[in-house]
Length: 89
Length: 312
Length: 99
Image (cartoon, rainbow over all chains, first blue to last red; front, side):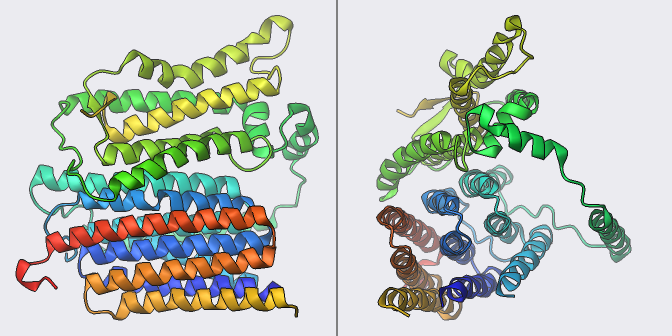
């Protein structure tokens, strides 16, 4: 039961990531694209935790810890972005 | 089967994201694609059972490079006073098609050679694995980095120092202070974030250093995590660039190289080879010095400043 | 299939559901503020459920504690990021078009 549930969860989350890519394409504003990056961050954390359990590599939980700990840095860097809308080419 | 599906999604995702990063519609999308590329890359390292590399990718990718690109974007924007339109040059089919074909051919032939090579047991790896218990550390990555290829690791530290010196020379050409710094307006919640994340990054850095002996981790990952805490302090204006490199900063910058070299030379009079490790204590001493040097070098490189000081 | 596995399966599947719900919100909602709202809330609930499912399945208190710390840090990062992005988005929007 559990030996297929964990990889299945991983696949669902990865597909979720791919769907989220659409938002990076569509934009339209830079803030929308940052939101997509936020989605990828939290989904990657979940995937890493699932992998840690499924593959029995406990160090992957440390990797997930680093990602959640440092996730806000990118948003803080983004806040200083210029005023105008860089979303559209 | 299900594992193969996961690996296929990750592998296709990496190539596709790399493509999107170099040919994105605009620079901001390309930056986001690059950040996502780092995330997927760490998943790939995870699938390859290489948590050491996943840790490094997480610390560098999430903590430093993404922020560096976003800050660079902002500085270019302020310096030029307009949205930069760099890097998205017109594509010429006559140039890209043969280049892509040649690259594909190269990769295919390399892959074919790698697949058809007789499976020789990796002798160096086997020897290192057998003699690992003599090192006193059970994490093979740390053992190899400090025991079996210590010379490489030492020179990597020299390269890091040289990179900082090079950046320092270039930065002084740009006149210090000419670059606009991050916005220093006080935003709610940022104080709370700092008061939690910065101490935790220090704790995690020490944890990774200590874990490096027996589990994935080590000086480089720990240093990068500590540097990420410093980068956060720079971004929020808690640290600002100073005109001079202070004495303490100079000492910390060369600490890794100095401690590593002196421990390495210490065993020479006793007839041991250079860089022979006198014991486990030496490994932890060197790792601690490396961690401090790596962290400070990365923060100074990020800030493009000769030194840092607390903002008033 | 014992109770532990049933609970873990239910938690993991509902975690996936909330992640997908967050992504659907990100794709379908009309403006950046509602997208923020959808994404940050749903994803954090999804992360909690997945952490819970993994903790139940693993059954070790140490790992459950680590998963709890990861979730709390994720909550902090999402809260701060959401606030910062919303702030920037508000500055970039025309005053007449603000919600």
